[in-house]
Image (cartoon, rainbow, N blue to C red; front, side, top):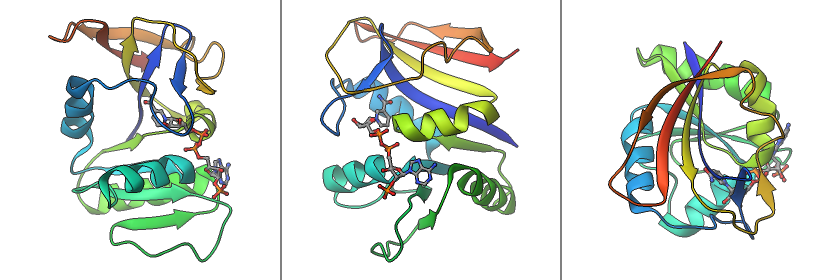
Length: 167
Ligand SMILES: NC(=O)c1ccc[n+]([C@@H]2O[C@H](COP(=O)([O-])OP(=O)(O)OC[C@H]3O[C@@H](n4cnc5c(N)ncnc54)[C@H](OP(=O)(O)O)[C@@H]3O)[C@@H](O)[C@H]2O)c1
């Protein structure tokens, strides 16, 4: 069972602004959908809320394990709440294994990435070749334990897709 992080970050490792993404790249969103559909994803409560606000529902075709300190949050089909990152990863892996699959995706945001990185084996990074203002970022030096494993140049200018594996 692999724990993977999937994230888009600019050249300063900025990932978010005012609760949302600081950019819109449809090719990145398509890649996110292609890689994560059919798997269990782990999200922070704020990232989960922003997805529900944008789509009107949780991510289709995926079970979302949401990390939150709160109890009594609204029930959604396909959504499970857990009180910390470790238990969210445990539950996500158990469901993924039960479904006969072998890769759990951590989909952010910054707090949950920071909590999950020590257990992460693979990173799917969309590098945004820009330096944008933001208020959410990856931790400093976060890619140091990983080696670049693959690189793709998408059709969209200004981004590249990079895959890293824990060395
Ligand atoms: N570029 C990308 O690929 C990408 C991906 C995802 C998100 N983002 C961006 O990242 C930003 C959101 O990141 P964020 O760090 O502010 O929020 P977040 O990680 O999405 O959610 C934070 C919330 O998760 C819960 N949480 C986090 N760690 C926890 C722990 N150890 N134990 C219990 N609960 C915990 C808490 O929820 P409660 O407050 O309910 O207790 C906390 O307030 C947004 O701008 C979003 O657009 C970017």
